[in-house]
Length: 135
Length: 135
DNA sequence: TATAAAACCTGTAGTAACTACAGGATCAAG
DNA sequence: CTTGATCCTGTAGTTACTACAGGTTTTATA
Image (tube, rainbow over all chains, first blue to last red; front, side, top):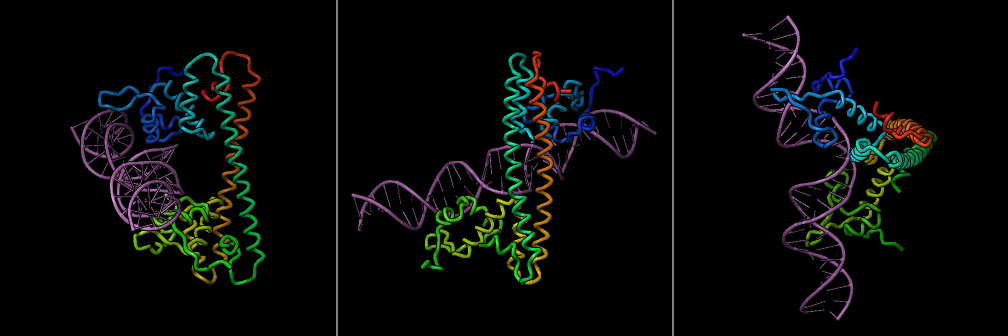
């Protein structure tokens, strides 16, 4: 069986979680990760719990949550009780943001496509992309 | 008729182009805008040409081009000749980037929706969003 | 014309979320 | 016990702005 009391160096934690070593240090400075124990020589030593927390952070980052949103979610996760609704709300708000971004990017996409199309159909010496944007 | 030799103060240019005054100064520092003439007292005085250039920059930014991409496009626009193909290429590359971003965001969107759905269907005391992310 | 308010000037620092050193100490393997 | 890998701290760089502070100029009003 796996040892539930396993510990990790910063590099090992990095490998385990897929978060770069320097980024781990950054998360500590931000307050996302608690300061870990240290070895006699001052090297960081992480526990399983801290590894789990870091994995959570990584997943949230992949989903586009900001550091401060994650701070909020972790706070909610730490405080037991009537928090599910708040977590759902944070997530829903974030979903709205993501959907807005998608809308904006799609508009951009269409405009860029149009520009390229105009360029393809072009035979004059000037560049239609530049022309359109420069007027 | 409009005076083609009209000039603008920084604030007037900001109003005209929709680019904030401080941002105009920043674009100058970046080399996107040439240093304008100055009044006796040192205030910047912009010409119509510079206004047109700034509008171009603003449109490019709205389409998500980076400062350095815009520098490239402006360089191409300034050099006459066989540049249309290069402009099209820059634009196409940028379009790819935009489409990649859309793909990523849609994945995020779906995952966030799933999390929220799980939360809605939940009746246990713990929060399924936290649970899913924390494992 | 005198004054006051608005706009402008420079330079610097802050924002988000990292990334990348430099210069040195510690750890793990052989 | 040596050596190479990893780790330490602190600082600076990245992108595209934004926001001062402290002072000067311009413009509008009386």
